[in-house]
Amino acid sequence: PYDGRVFADFVFNVLRGESIVMNSDGSARRAFCYVSDAIAGFFSVLLKGNPAQPYNVANPAGELSVMELAELLVCLYPEKGLVVNRRYAPGGLEYLSSAYTRLIPDVTRLSSLGWSANVNPATGFRRMIEAYQ
Image 1 (cartoon, rainbow, N blue to C red):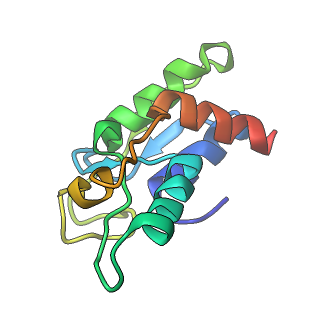
Image 2 (cartoon, one colour; image 1 turned 180 degrees about the horizontal axis):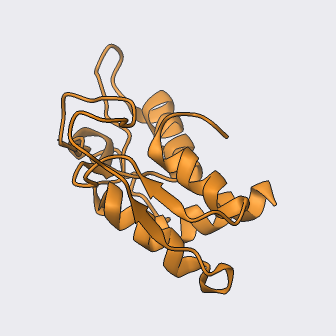
């Protein structure tokens, strides 16, 4: 519950019925990939991939900013009355730092094996939260 990465911290905020506290400006963008899609990607590489060939496993269609993720989670559970609170101040408390403001891996090689992601972020995060309940 205190992972330090926004996807896990935000999910546990929802589970505890806490509003989401934004400790960054929320502009960093990431490709969120649901675990079943990732596992299918790993097996595609193991069963169909070329030896010693690197493959990225990600869902470029699942690209969201940190702020968009927070807003998505609030919208998925309107009955909880959650909001996104911004307490970000440059140079203050932030999430684990990253050198990348946008991290969307190229999955062309993996896609050439016939793999594609099937679970969008809204469905994936709802499933994750339901699994923890």
